[in-house]
Image (cartoon, rainbow over all chains, first blue to last red; front, side, top):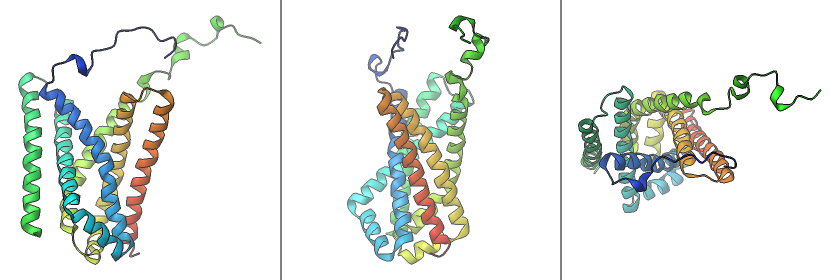
Length: 130
Length: 132
């Protein structure tokens, strides 16, 4: 910006050794961006249901294909990861959990929890719906 | 009557009031958290319903989505999610797009995308609920 003072910039990513909590912050942002576009998948499904039987079976076929299911598994993991990350932020909002122990634990719980819940969800879907 | 820059009737405090970043930051933060709570609660209700409906024939899906309670949850979810999406993506754009023109274009596209996605989804749910 013209005329801006030459103030020192705060250190950014490239200056730090990669840490788990840093990675969780980045993944929270990436899953957020992915979910941003993922919402379109939900809306396409709703629009197809509102349009015609033919449109709906086309979308159903696409989402039910191997590639479609792969995207949906990724979508659900991103959703669960972002939701758990959000709960972590709510805990931090109260002022709690900033110490080295809790924040590392939150990071591990978010990763482990998101993978575990995604697997459980799809196993249940597979058992109930075949 | 000409007023030289140094002799304005306005105080230095008044001249900068409202120009700084402190004007809307708290509101932005609050809305992000508020919609996050909404998303969490509504997803917990909507996700099992969407999973139950997924893969079924159109008539059955329409019957599920068309139920007033389900339709209301889906409408609230779309509303909450699209608000959350807009302010979340706004922060991402402001962090990474530093070219002024490109940044403004991206922010406009962000607003258009989220409103379009939200409106399209709401239209679909309403059309189904009203029996169309």
